[in-house]
Amino acid sequence: MWAPDINEGSPTPVTTFLSIAPKISISANISRLSIYGSYGATLQQIFLFCSIASMILGALAAMAQTKVKRLLAHSSIGHVGYIRTGFSCGTIEGIQSLLIGIFIYASMTIDAFAIVQHYGKPVSNI
Image (cartoon, one colour):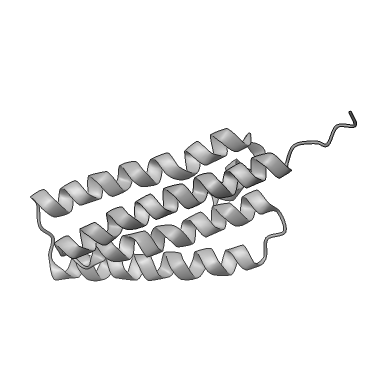
């Protein structure tokens, strides 16, 4: 998986942006697809399966991490599954839950990386 490697090697503000921006844009595009188009029951089941797989794989991979940025990357993979579960419902209420989930995810990620940025600074002796 590329996300943990990118998170570990990038500066924290870049990592924060790369953790949030793609998920917001993909969710917006998927929401537009859901509102203006329709998809059948087969695609709905595929979305649900992918959501559940993302939740499980993200959680299992996060348990083995020792570095905070890698842990947050795997947590991000799991959160995509939680957010996409709302989309797999195929209803307006599902889209509303997707938007609420994106807002909560974005604010949580900004807070988590702000803490990493604050405590990741070297301590200077003044």
